[in-house]
Figure 1 (cartoon, rainbow, N blue to C red):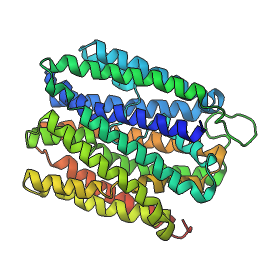
Figure 2 (figure 1 turned 60 degrees about the vertical axis):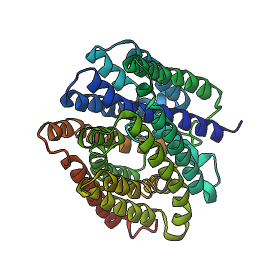
Figure 3 (figure 1 turned 90 degrees about the vertical axis):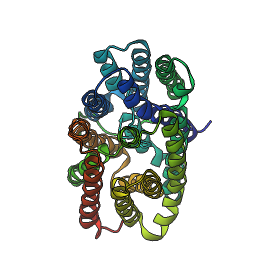
Length: 391
C-alpha cells in the first residue's frame, strides 16, 4: 500500500472519532451535572493539549523523527481513550481530553495534521498536490460526518452515560489502529539532509518571518473558530433550541457531508483563482453566513445559514495547506505547520472560558457573532499581506 493511502486512512479514522467526541463531550459533561463553566474548561483542555504537543513537535520533532512522533501521539490517544472511558472524575476527564489531541471541528490543528500535511507534498507531483490536499480533507470531513452521526448513539440506549463511556473506549481503540498504520507507513522523514537542530534552526530567515506573520494571522482565525467550533455549536443548539443529542448527530452528519464535498471543489477553483484568492474569498463569505446563524430568529433559518456556511467554510483548508507547501521547503514544512498550529491552538484556548462566561451571562449568541467577525478580520489581513506574491 502506498504511503499516501496510509495517511488517508489515518486521517479518516482519526477525524471520525474526533468529530464524535466534539459533539458528545459537552453533552456528556452536562449530563454528569457539570455547569457551562466546566464545559468551557473541557474545551480549553482539548485546545491546550493540541498546543502543548505542537510545541513539543516544534522543538524536538527533528530529533524524534516524523514517524516516531506519530507513534508517540498515537499511544497518547490510547491513554486518552482509556481515561475517558473509565472515570467520571473531572480532573481525570480533563487529563484525558488534554492528552488525546482531539479535534473540536472537522479539521485539525494538532500534531498529527502538522506532520501529515508536511509529508503529503512529498508523496505527489507538484501539479497534483492541491487535489491531494482536497482528497485528504474530503476524507477527513466525510469521516467526520460518520462520527457526528455516531454521537447520537447514547440517546438510543437506556443507560446513555454508559454508552457514552463506551464511545470513548472506541476512541482509544482508534489509537491502536493508528499505531499499526504508522508502524507500516515506511520512510516519511525529510528528504533534505543537514544537521538536526532544536526548534527552527533549520528554517531560512525569510521563512521564519513568514511563520511569525502567519502565526499571528492564524491565531486570529483560530480564536474566532474556537467560539464557533462543532463543540460550541452543538452546545448552543442544545441550549437555545433544545436540540437533542440524536438530532445533533443527524444535523452534523449532513453538515459534514456538505463540507466534505466542498473540499473537493476547492482545488479545482484554486487552479483558476490561485490558492490565496480561493481561501480568502470562500472563507469571508462563509463568515457572513455564520453571523446570520444567531440572527436568523428560528431553528430552521439558523440551520439553513449553518448549511450555507458549511458549504464553503472549509474550502480554505486544502488551499491553505497548499499555500503553506508553496511557501516552505520540505525540511521547513513540519516545523512551520507545528508553529502555526501551535498559535492556532493557544489562541483557541481563549475561546473555551470566554464562551463559558458568555453563556453563563445569558449572551448565547455573542460567541458566534464574535467568532464570525474575528474570522473576517483574518481574511482581510492575510489577503492584504500576500496578495502581491503570486499565490
